[in-house]
Length: 402
Ligand code: ADP
Image (tube, rainbow, N blue to C red; front, side, top):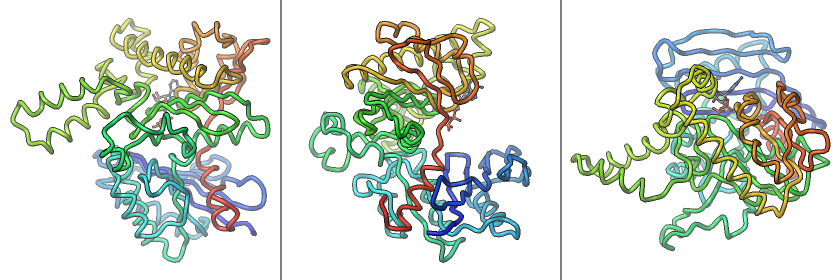
């Protein structure tokens, strides 16, 4: 296959990130990247594009009342002269439901099928399927492909994939899918050909999850049916006694709300108003929390303590799952940039052979942060999700794999 530009689209609840890579025989090369941010927030819209050297070639502050306006800007820019026109498009999708579990060619029917399972990733699926339909419309004749986060977790053993619920709901597709799979794939890819036998990866961003990886394959992951499960994260509860959700639901119903309204508010409480934001009553942003901790804010301290403690417990559990540990990798915005979180998480894990060197931990970007002679290697590796999507698209295009 010759060289061809592949557009990667990765949408969040208020942003659309995109990049174009030149895919060829070797490792793909980034041609440009950009984002439209602040969708639905009056006066806060931004649209930027950087070229391969990192220079901003577009920097605008448009009004972005909705996702349609935002995506139209991206499509218009990519159709301008001087911009690489995509020959294929790869879409990141958190979860396609129980029937769409493989990365594949995107059709309108496939989008409809994945949309049936919006409840399995309620913050991500609505905008992702919207962007997919827009891409089919605005880039006619360009092949589109879907790349799933859940793909990395496709080989989870039954004991963790299956959830202890009535069979009726298991039959409706309710099970552990996990998320951040493309990030996990990118970490395994970065470690190749020396992927350690027993690996734990902590993807700590606005959403946070942790995975146990054996011989390069995901065997356990903290997020469950939806990305709300697992570790407490920016605005999400993480794992919680179901009784708490039932208590909140009954409280909402007691104030005269309809069942649908109560379910929507419960979803909002669990996924948008909890986590670091809910505990700190301040922010879900780790930088803001660290600043508040610095000025003695006890709620911010408690929020970060709950976060760190949950991750430490998961690491202990996953060492049991893997029967020991060779390497621990931190990734995601917090995992990459917040040395204090890394130090706090690893403090107390020395008994498992995890020894972090304080000076090495003071790094920016990719680094080995474990002490000389530490039985477990501890590393920081930024995720490269777009690169993984391009590789999947290239394999799907030339029929050499998924
Ligand atoms: P998303 O899940 O939205 O992709 P990111 O991976 O970008 O999130 O991570 C966002 C988180 O990373 C935020 O909590 C942010 O505060 C944190 N973060 C980013 N840069 C830093 C930094 N320099 N120090 C501490 N935390 C940081």
